[in-house]
Image (cartoon, rainbow over all chains, first blue to last red):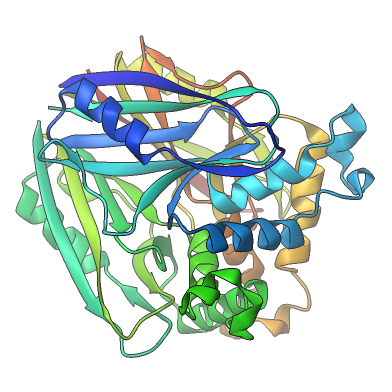
Amino acid sequence: MKSYRKELWFNIPTRRAFVNITGQVAEALAESGVKEGLVLCNAMHITASVFINDDEGGLHHDYDQWLERLAPHEPVDRYRHNDTGEDNADAHLKRQVMGREVVVAVTGGKLDLGPWEQIFYGEFDGRRRKRALVKIIGE
Amino acid sequence: MKSYRKELWFNIPTRRAFVNITGQVAEALAESGVKEGLVLCNAMHITASVFINDDEGGLHHDYDQWLERLAPHEPVDRYRHNDTGEDNADAHLKRQVMGREVVVAVTGGKLDLGPWEQIFYGEFDGRRRKRALVKIIGE
Amino acid sequence: MKSYRKELWFNIPTRRAFVNITGQVAEALAESGVKEGLVLCNAMHITASVFINDDEGGLHHDYDQWLERLAPHEPVDRYRHNDTGEDNADAHLKRQVMGREVVVAVTGGKLDLGPWEQIFYGEFDGRRRKRALVKIIGE
């Protein structure tokens, strides 16, 4: 069994953003030499997500508006977590809706994705250096 | 290490539905010959889910009502994604709540599920041919 | 390829609670002898979650309030699932938001977690014996 590990680093200039990382995950897979197996890709931070959906700007706008409606950033004092001096409680909630991780099949040395599946890093509390983990196992 | 891949195809006649696929996933596992390992089962489309919950019709009704309240289908022009000519932005949102994939342990050649765990394909934008992927790795 | 399986049992005295199980998962990993691979940890019950987030009491309070707003326990007769004699339909909904499972990388024999990542069992319908599964594969 082969295994491979790589960190992807981000420093998003805004509080929230979605970044297409499909190419970077595919690159890690090529580096790993794994032909059949599984790729785990997860946010290593608890106010960020890795998820799979469509690379369409209108949809990303809709996600942002929707998440803000489900778990508004303000007023920050509505969240007890923010009594610790943080202002990011909403980011911890938004991340649960969007998820921490994806597991993607590897078949014939490629990411075995459907035609519109793209992998995203979802940032909900940016403006600092943060990372996602790619771990690949297989043969 | 063994690996096995199978696609499950659906053509749901309604916009939304939940289909119990536990038997089909168990069949793929039997075909794979894997005794110890992991099964990944994921929607290959971004307006559908694979998730695990109870096979109880009342609950599925509750899920449908609840998801419609969290991310209503109409008015379709409330979503910027639908400016592209689609009317399925709500389906992209609903799928994030229900999730893209499940990973299930394989123990002694069987799906290692709790007593009420059943695997479902969740369709949120049906009336077309769509698929889920089963990928199994192990020994 | 090695594989290892362990059940973690809970009997939460309240309806809802979050329990940090990172130590128990790390212990299972040490028992497995796996150095490179993947850990799957999932609730075996459909009204409970395993998820990763912050071990901060204020945040757990916020999660509880937020989930209760998204999927209120009462009135119990608002849910058709509860016509079966259950009163836990809300728990099935809350669990979908928080997720069933986490997959964690194993690197150098350790859980490959970010600095604040902690693994939790999330109970939404307690006061009975329930379990989570830890399945580890790798080398």
